[in-house]
Length: 167
Image (cartoon, rainbow, N blue to C red; front, side, top):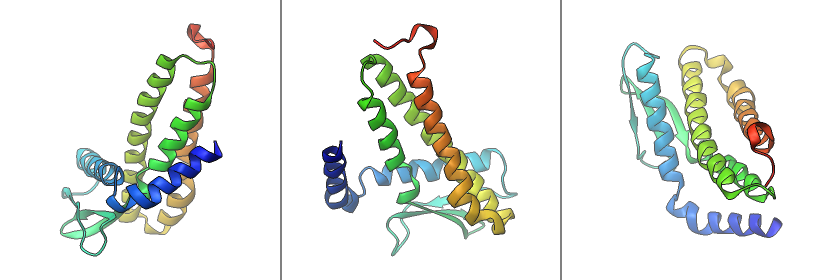
C-alpha cells in the first residue's frame, strides 16, 4: 500500500500536476456544475458565469457575478485525492465481486462529484450572503460533509444486505 501511494504521489507531482491532468477536467466540471446549479436555483438575482483560464493563476477557475469574481475554485478543491482514496479502499477490500466494486467505484465517484458541486454551491452562497461563516464552513463543516458521504458509501459497500454478501 505504501508503495502504491508513493508511486501515485511521485507520478502526480512530477508528471500529472504540471500538465493539470486530470485536475483541469475535474475543476472545469466542478466549476461548471456550480454555475449551472446556482443559476438553476436562482442563487442570485442575475446569472453566474465562469472563467476557465485566469491569467497568472492557471490552477483556478472563477465564478463571476455581474462581472465581478464571486468565488475562485482551485484544483485542490476538485476532490481528486478524496476520490482516489475512496476508490483505493474499495479496490483493497478483499472478497467482493468485481461487478460490485465497479458499481461502487463508478456510482460513488458520480455521487462524490455531485456532492462537491453542492458543497461549492453552498460555499458560493456563504461567500455572497454570509461571508463571516465562509472559512469555518469551508474548512470544517463542508469537509466533514464529504467525509461522511465517503464513509457512508464504504459502509454501504461492505454491508451484506439484499444478497450482496461477500463473494
